[in-house]
Each structure stands twice: as C-alpha cells, then as structure tokens.
Length: 489
Image 1 (spheres, rainbow, N blue to C red):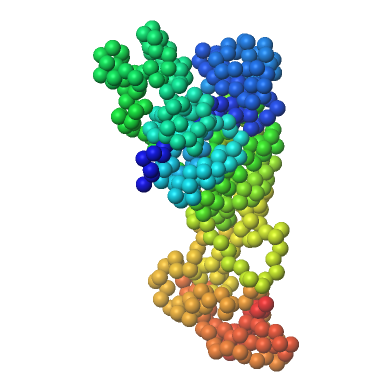
Image 2: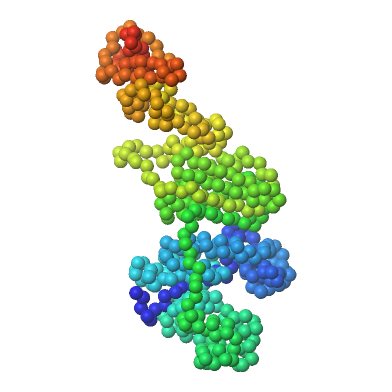
C-alpha cells in the first residue's frame, strides 16, 4: 500500500500533441493546429520559435511566420495518439485512464515498489516519453483532479510531496483552473483570485451562493467525489494511422511513414512476444476509393526490417490512382512468437534468409500464381505423394482423403508419414534396374493401392546400395521385375 503522505496519481499533459506528431514528418516545417474559431490551439517547436502562441488569431500567426502550415483540430486523431501513448506506457503502468482530451492519468502508487522507488520509476518513464519527441508536463497528486490541474497549468512536479503539491495548488490563479470563462467571471466578481480563496470558504456556502458545477469541481479536487474514468485496455490487434502533412504522389514517398509505423508494429509485437501472419496497408485518397495492400506471410514475422522490405517490393508494382493523404497499418492475425531451434555449434550467416523470408519476398515480387510449393498428399503412390500448389490452393494433406480405400495397406501410409524412408530425388519414371551388383539394406515395404483411378500398383520397396556405395530406392513387382525409382542424398 502507498503511504498516506505520498500522492498516488500522475497526470501527463500533452499541450501540443497533434502538432508534435505532425512535426515528426518534417521537423523543418512550422506547424500550427487551429480550433474551430480559427485560433492557434497547438503549435510545434519551430512555430513557437517564430513567436506563434496558443490563442493567437491565425492571420497574426501567418504574419509572424509566412511558411506556417495550418492544420484543423482533429479530436479523433488526438484520441488515437493518446491511445498509442497509453499502449506504450502500459509496460510501466497497468492502470491508465483516457478521460482527458490532452493527457493521460496514471495510477502509479502500486508501481513504485516494482521499479525500486518513485525516483527510479519516474526516470524510466520519463526517458521512454522523451524518446517519442513529444512535449509534456507531468504532475503528481493525491486526487486525479489535483494532478490534472497542476500539469495542465504547466507545472512539472512528478516527485513532489503532498505538502509541496498542496502549496502549489493554493497559489493557482483562476485563469489556471479548468473553469469556463463565465465561472471565472462569477468568482472574480466576488473578489476571488486564487484557489486558496475558494478552499477557505466552507463547501456549504458554495452550494448556496454559486452554481453546482463549481461545487462539484471542488469535490473532485478534494477527493470527496470519485470520477468514473475510462480505463485503457491493451488492444487485441495493432492499428496505426498516419495523417500526411503533405499529399504523397509517388509510391516511394510512402516508405518514410511506413518505416515509422512498421517500427511501432515491431515494438508492439516484441513487447507481447507475438508475430504477425499478415499486415494490411490501407492508403487513403481524397476522392478515390482507398488502396489496400495485403502482405501475406509464409511464416509469422515480427521484425520491422522484414515488413519494410516486403512493403517496398509491393509498392514498386503499385500505381497510385490518386495522391495519398493518409495511411493505416493493421495487423490483426497475431500468434505467439516462436524462436527457431538452432544448433549451438552450427556456422551461421546473419545475412542469410530462412525459407519463410525467401518465400515472403518471392510472393511480394511475383504474381501469386507464380510461386508454388510442395505439399504432402494422402496418396501412398510415390509418384503422387506430393503436389505443387499456390497460396490460394487448398493443400491436400495426409489423412484427408476418403477412408473407404480399404486396401491401402498401413505400411504404405506409414511410409508417407515417415519422410526419412523416402529419397529426396525421385526419378521422373522408374527405370529397369541396371545389371550391376546391388546390396539390399532394408526389409521389403509393400505399397499396394490405386484401384480407385485405374492406376493400381503393387510394389515391394527396398533401400539398396550400388557398387559405388550410393544409397538408392528400388522396388520389385509381382512379376519379379526390378526397377530403380530414386536416390538418397
């Protein structure tokens, strides 16, 4: 349990979240976000250096910086970014509330012990937040509203004591409190200038003299009223949206935002020890229907570099019907990540591709019908034991055929399942066994089947060695004729 003398809440306030996120696309472009009244709501660092301030009319901001890029306020986009930050912070805090428009509320008291104290916990969380290049204020509080008010006012007090936090709260002016203009004016008219003036008046008098909204807000500040927060839950799938600062007219221009988004996918999968079976890229256009690119993977993958290579191969073949104004990346088919078994003493090549990666790249570069692979068939006849199929074909696997073929002997079916008894190299057609010395190395293995399609066979197969010591696969027919059918590697 947390000490009663320590705050238990931490509020992270991001005053310029949407502007900072857009600034990641081009740090050299000044950006301002306008509210519905055409006033500056947010601005990036570069715009701030030019003198642009929150609340400024957009015409004045343009006079200060004619290169200023103006973007509308998008509440949905703001909430999406906050949800992404909450997902990122989930590894440091299990209870995160999405109850505020420009910030996150964290219940941190239960995490201090796990991270070795308040200071060490905040150091790790602060470094993680700063790596995202977003400006923020952080303040602790004994109640959620207390932490929210201090951080919203621009104070950074993540490690302050309860006494220090209360002192700072009392000094806040009416303009620093989250009250409407009319509520501030009603308080100013009776001579109230600071929060201390409010808290010195008994609550009973507030209910009689002022609106219920101010009294309710004070109850939330003091903790007498508990808020119902919208607690964050980690998403079951990965979804990221990218609003383009400038329209993208060529497919090569999509690689920069995709690199950023796929790297986030990599972090998402790594934290959860998951891998993606498929990744969907959705390119949004102003007038045309969205373009969709599906990256189907031969084996589940989690590395951002591999995703980016596949995306680049697909984009090289893409002709955009219209400029791209937004991008969405979705990974919904997720499975537990499996580490490949390796030999401790085997020589490895870090640049070599495994079979799945090679197949992924072939599928991205070629048409789906041009990439085929072998699958095991339920037919015991060696010539028909394997089939070449494409990704869209339904593979025929052992055991799926009609079980009414009762004369297919068990040893033949076991032979299909045990690939070690079958040679890697089968001849196109069996050839008569050459007249030279042979030595049989195994007992006969009979395959008698094929009556259902007029291709009946009855053969006794042996592993044999020729005069040069090479292993081969031979069989004998009921007429006592011998044939060579394949070679072992």
